Each structure stands twice: as C-alpha cells, then as structure tokens.
Amino acid sequence: MNDVNERKDGLTLFDKIWDAHVVSSVEDGPDQLYIDIHYCHEVTSPQAFDGLRNRNLNVFRPENTFCTVDHNIPTADQDKPVKDPVSKFQIDTLEQNAREFGVSFFGLGHEKNGIVHVVGPENGLTLPGMTIVCGDSHTSTHGAFGSIAFGIGTSEVEMTLASQCILQPKPLKMKVSIWGKLRKMVTAKDVVLYVIARMGTGGATGYFIEYDGEIIVNMSMEERMTVCNMSIELGARGGMIAPDQKTFDYLREREFAPKGEDWDIAVERWRALKSDANAIFDKEIFFDVSDIEPMITYGTNPGTGIYVKENIPEYNAIDGDSLPSFKKMLDYMGFVPGEKLLGKPVDYVFLGSCTNGRIEDFRLFADFVKGRKKADNVTAWIVPGSKAVEKQAIEEGLVEILEKAGFEMRQPGCSACLAMNDDKVPAGKYAVSTSNRNFEGRQGPGARTLLAGPLVAAAAAIAGVIADPRNIPVPRINLDEWIITSTEPEAKPDGKKSADD
Image 1: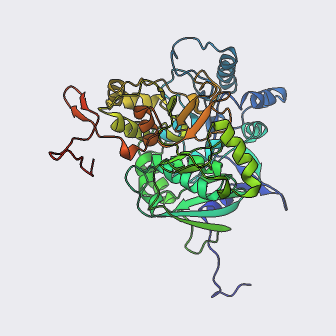
Image 2: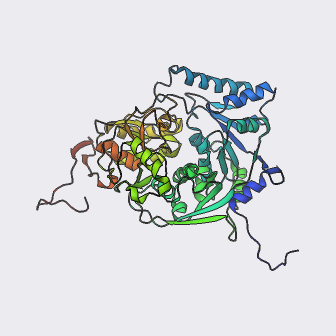
C-alpha cells in the first residue's frame, strides 16, 4: 500500500480520454478502444463497406458515422456530372454505401459537403473528450478540440463500422510547449513548419502530442486546427490541445453540439479535460518562437522548412547519412545548395486543404491581396474547405475582394492538396501551397511543391515569385473604386522612401 503522503503521478489529458474509452485490454498488447465519431470519405471506405457486405454485417452504430466526398471531387462545375470515371465511381460508391448502411452522407452540392476535417468541427460533430477516427492521416486535426483523433487504415475502418471499436496500442505521450509572442505576418502554419523543421519528420514517432504554451493559448480554434493537422508530419500518432473558453465559444450553437441544459452540463465536464499539474509525459519539448519568421519549404518533405528569406542549406550543413536524400530532393526540386528562394518564379498558388481551407485563412489571404493584383504568370486555385466556408466568404465580401484582385474562388474539395482530382500541378512547375505535404508527385506527377502559410502564398501570387509578405509594397487604393494608384511606397520630398514602408 502506498503511503498517503507519497506523491502520486497525475494523469495527462490523453490518459483521461483514452482510459475512459478502453473497453478491454490484451495483456502486453493493444486496447480495445471505443470510438465516439467515425468519419468516412470516398477513398478509404469502399473495401470496408464491402467487407461488411461479405460478412452480412450492419454498421453497428450508424448514427456515429458521417460520410463526405472530398478527395476526388472536382472544384469547378459541381452541378454537372463528374467527368473522371475513377473519381465518379468512388463518389457514387460512397453514396450507395451510405444509403445501404444508413449512415449520414454529405454529397456533392449538400450544404454540409466539404473536406472531412473541416465539416466535422464546423458542424459541432467534433467535441472535447471524444475519440475520433477516419481513414485519413490528417484526422489529427480534430485534436484541437481536446479529443483523441487519429487516422486509420481500411481494415480498421471496417472494424470501426462493424463494432464501433478499434484495437490500438496506447501511444507514448509527448508535451510540446510553444512560448513567445509572434512577429508580424507570422501565422500558425509558420509555427508548425518551424517545429517540424526543428524536430524532424520522425521526431514524434510513436507519440501522441499535447500542445500547450502561450502561443497555443493565444491561437484561435482555426489556428489550433492547423497545428494539430500537421502533427502527423512529425511522425506523431496525433496531436491535441486542452479545451478552453475559446473551444466552448467556437462550438456553442453548432448544429450537432449539445443545446440548453445539456450544453451547460457538457461544458462543465469539458472544463476538467486538462492534464494534471503533476502529470508525467514520456518526453517534453519546449520552443520559444518569438523570433521566427514566415516559413517555406525547399525540399520534398515537410521538415525542410526555412525562413522565406533564408538560403537553402549547404552540403556541409547536412548530416552525412542524410546527404544522399538531400541531393535527391534538391535535384527533384531543381534547386542547388546555398541559393535563395526569394525571387524564384512561381507557376501555381494553392490556398485550401484541411490545413488552411477555413474562413480565417480566406480572410487573411483576402486582406493581403486587397488593392493588389495577381501576377499574370501565376495560376491560383483558391479553394474553400467546405460549402459553409464558401457561403461565408461570399457573405463577408471576400469573394468580391479576390475577384477584384484577379482571383477566382473555386468550389469546395481537397483540390490540389493531392493528385486525386482535376486540380493537378503539371510536371516541373512550382506551386506555393498551403497544404500539408510536399512529397514527390503529391500535387501531380513531377510537380514541385513549396509548403507555406496563407500570407507567403498570397505574396507569391501577387509578386509572381517567392516573396516575403513583409516586403510587398502596400498599395494605395481608392477604397470606393478599388483602383490601384501605385504599387510602390510613396517617396518623401527628399526622394527617399519611409523605412516603415
């Protein structure tokens, strides 16, 4: 028996949620974990539904499964038949499966259609304290609400459909504390790219991350979703953030969130969802990000982030074991060691994806391009993450701002995040993308992807080259007519320009 005065280790947020959902455990093996919400899309679910059909099984709890089409759908002419036969087959198959097995389906044109990791939170389906799975790597996004959320494979999708449970070994626990005060034009995407660059793409393998610290606390819910979304790029099983008043304010009155007295009871329960002061993590890492600047990647993994104004590393800065892969990625990207990225021509700019396809991202992008004009050499795909984001962008006048700057907003979908629909970047072309992965061919065979946040993407779209958003001249515009009168800072009487410009 422990002495009553002996200090006991507390529980982490992860422990509290995981342990509360364990149905049974295999000795020295995995836990049988109950799943609260199961999200499905058209790519990873067909074989799972076929598995149920072949075994004469039903979906165990159909009210807990929500399906949407996002990966394969076109982002233009969504009111017309889908042209690509493979995409059409997958879209139609999910609709048929949802109808047969009685699960919710948000199809093309549905008011709730969109990227699965955007529509879940915005409809109040994702709630604190939940366990959430989806056949998609970036399910970690939902951890921003204080939930355990992670991606699963197709066989596990079938397991969840059949039993509402999944067999999973309990991951190790890591705390990543991010402190400081962000500089001008540094976004949540820059923060997470910085963390990945410092930790490496395998720096959290085997762990589930809890983020905290001043920076995280001060982030909006949409910014927190961006950070948790990219946890998987650290090799982590997922990422999460303790719920707080911002979480509750975001969820209040969402369609599927509790209402009335049930809401008050839920919030009271959610307030307890935080790590104990004496909780023990398997690993803790601290970052002070006060001095970081807008980021961009130069290579073919998300860990190759540098400040947009920095040079690509020289060979002598690379560990010997990593040198062959470093040379290979630079050859693919058409870059050489030590050169600057600033000023390099850009062919495509993509704003969207489950990382940066929310309304705040559109506000940020539109605010930057207002009064400016898109470069003629740039093809821009501006793609909302959901029908709700599309509707809100129209209502707030963001679409009008974009159109006057030379941009056209497309319809919702995963779009150029991955080459599974019509929005593919051609071979050899450069795309500054707000998505989450820059692997070889990720945006199309031979496409060259540079990951960045909305402001660096907006700067590239305006300048036509990779540019630091802090150095793009502020336009002087007639706010009534929105006519650009100058693209350069105004000269003072002595012919010099203001340092503030």
